Image (cartoon, rainbow, N blue to C red; front, side, top):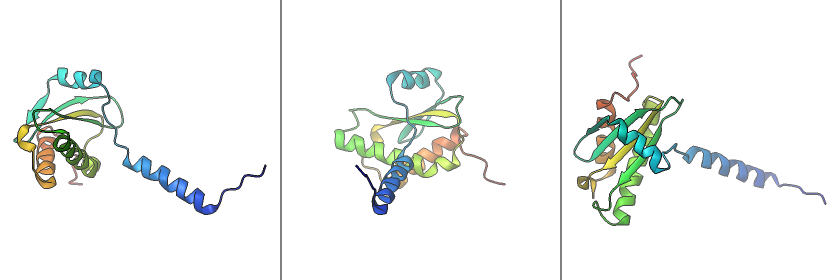
Length: 136
């Protein structure tokens, strides 16, 4: 049986693989990983977010996002998660590598737009000195 792939199918498969790779954000997966960051107790907060950090001895940073049920229903909570994840994704090139970061959304983050959440995220990154020195 002679199996041949059409060049369009190969191109489509490569694009899907590339898209999947590009969308990947290294994240904290289980409660043990979250607990390690929480127990390090290095946290700072602002009006909308609380950020915990822990050096992770790896060449990349990982992010975990937590939004309590007190903040709102699942639609509201998931929107906040998406906003924080997008803030991280767009700014991860300007962040130092090698940290586990846990972001906890406060109740006041409910209903805020992307720019408010991104501003709060970057403010905490500056306070934690996670931003790379781009003055070169």
